[in-house]
Length: 140
Image: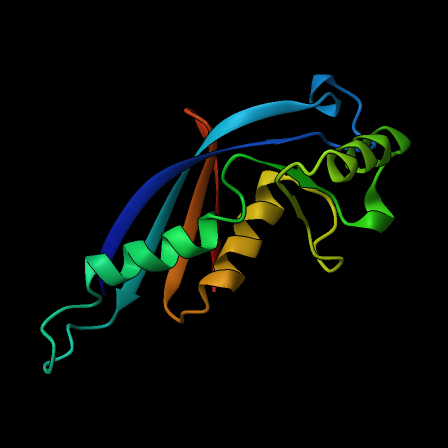
């Protein structure tokens, strides 16, 4: 396998509903996103797995919905506190992103899974760091 890798960062806030711990409070992260595109060999026609500029543009398009937003759980998974925050964010025209019902809570695992689905490419893996020392990896 041969892989190309592109990284970028974005900032977002969230709270973990129905979680017993300090992460149940609204807080933010500077997420580091790494997308890895892998193929068994380099295509002969292009000589590259993927153009870095194309990969970066796709990543920027996907990340734009999360950057400087409040990420909310799907409606059926929200605690009453998260619902109050959601109503406030809507009333004040805040930038927000709601997790799909199929993913539920706004955990780093589910955010990474959503990014993977939005990338819409085969042969990719997504790594998403929530802190400098903690990340998740999702592959297709």
